[in-house]
Image (cartoon, rainbow over all chains, first blue to last red; front, side):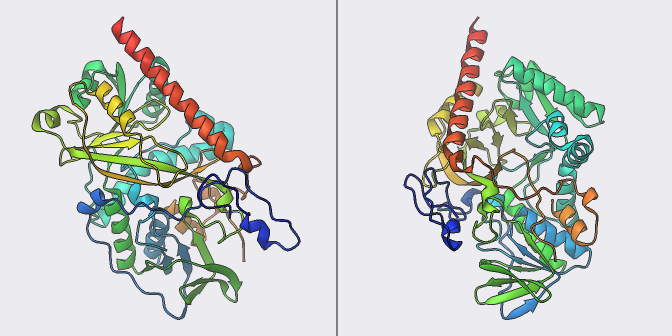
Length: 392
Length: 61
């Protein structure tokens, strides 16, 4: 699907595969995941248990379910299936969590992108209610799994702080806080002095504190999901790229590295790292965009004592890339801006330094010891989607 | 999502899914997605920068 890299137009493979159609060139080609030059984040690797040993897929086998993609969705599905006594085979093209799952900022949040009101207009009241309610309980589900399976992933569940960066942002936070308080959620507004006490910044006149959320080591979490799924009976095969999917007696055959799995059900859980050629049209529902993360050298003791001492990550109501967290080892971690589609680009470090100087005057420019990027799978309506691609 | 998918595979109903099933649809603006998104992101960057400027002015005054 589409073309690799940016700038020049190349033939659209999908069209070339359909007989009788002329090859169209793409004027503005989108990037072609699942290529990604950035490895699994070394910083998270430092604090994560090793990846579980996975199986090698050999021969032709059968399973109740085949899952393509060894990230949060795929492994969580495998684990929940295993809890129900349903056997699944997970095929991950690279290492466990190699995609978005290990490259995230590491917040566990009870929100979606859109407000509940917006979702109600998009999806109807009943569906929106179910979605908002489930998302609101999302952190309970994640932290519950972590506790149930003893997943070591540097959990800190002290809540999430959202700063109001503008009067409009403050209005948004007030509305959101009222919405969740009406549902009994532990969300409160903080005045300027309480915000400063928790975050160390005087930048915000007010903020909200949502105690449902927290932070994790995302790489450790996804590895923990894999280990737990394997212990409950799932088969996980890393470095096993699924190459072809076709109908077969018994349902579907997924071919990978000279072996295959047949099952009545296949789950494609590859998100931004979707190979558009695997299922026609699936990749075209996604807009793969670059996300950037930076982690500093450890702060000195006075700065550690002052900045984000409550252990909460700080984001605010601006439109782009505002996340700041402080790890237990005293390093600052930021979610940064950068070129949207360029695989080889760097984050806008100067912009990060300017923003941190605004938030924490006197901190001084930080030295960024760890940097990584990855693809994020945006959709056209900014909602996650679930598609039933085919039935038996 | 994983919990819901497992429940659905195990025989649960679509109505219980917290994410509704949606048809696979390619957007009509797919061919101009890249420049459109880049413009939108630049617009958001400008708005954020302007908000920071106004914030500094409010603080100064």
